[in-house]
Image 1 (tube, rainbow, N blue to C red):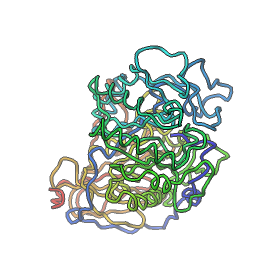
Image 2: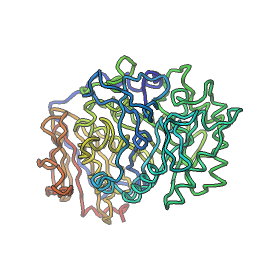
Image 3: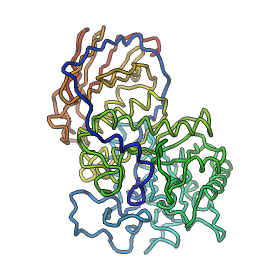
Image 4: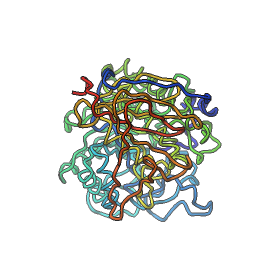
Length: 524
């Protein structure tokens, strides 16, 4: 999503989280775990691990400028969608990019390897994007809009979703262009989008009304937009969905950046006020989380450093944000599932190290924490754009977090087990995907200098991710660099067999341990 000069609130979560890495002990204790006895905590959606493709990627337009781009590079490009940037943002933070090629075989193949998943096509840009009625070319967006989504581009999304076994999630246009003279939201654009999707064999499985309504002004809402206006509009949206698209999951509110320590702002609408005004209607409670703002947004409070990337304070920010929004869920939408519909290393496109092995710790630890906490879906931002993309946006080659995502997808099933909370190691456990009785452990050693020891009573298959340099784009699996084959074939994920007994988890490494003979009754 987009966080720029207008995003100065809700970042209290990170200010205290940026003060260095955790202390290391001279010798880490041995942790003994019996996978056969780990109790069941709950289950997660089969599409738990999902991803975002920003709407501006689909239409083409200005997105976060690469760090390598020169200061003199143009940030606009003629009469196209490039004018679509968040209200109040610094234009120098953005650079024009062509629409993403969703027909690219490599992109489709790598996305399909993560299936099943949700593909969220949204972001702040979606709030002011016009969906074309026909194949007419536009010299400029219609009044009240900042970008045009052609039917061809949306058909590309639908075709990609089919090829990648993904379900489409999106949000509605909510800016001035979809309002009547009284300022009331009209469903015409939403109705056209759903109808066209059906007409070409697609399906919108889930929808948020607006991307990040608590930052409505930055998202292009009409001047003076407040909680009461949102409540009125949301009720109209829900009425439209229930009458016309009853199978679609209504998500909301999709807020960003709040914790118990959040500070108010004239540009900020509290999620509590949004929920009071909107009343019931959501099928799943959605929210967004970024632990910090990236270096692109330097000068705005809420930065982080690579030195903090393995600290407990930094990793714990995921749970702090969840706790705040879960308390609102419990009050206003009890028993509704929690969906994290947008998250990444840092807002504003991610820091330079978001594309390296260093951020893989956050990525997997976040999945582990949220699965243990019962969150049902986590959509990483993005699949293949900017520094926080799972794939390099130029080459579409996997970054370290993609390889981690693929291991998670292959090994971690939907039944979540309680591995406990331990000093010196982040440990998570799930039933092994598609193997009855088997258990997979995820052991993350965030200590940069000291190995940890995990003792298991049974033979295990070990998959260890490591890097010679934490800020390297290369990651190794059991000592061998991971890379695509000559025909974009995925490499074999060869395990190392570990006998019963102690297993060393090296400093700053991530290890999946598959215990095939666990015979855990929760995994039957």
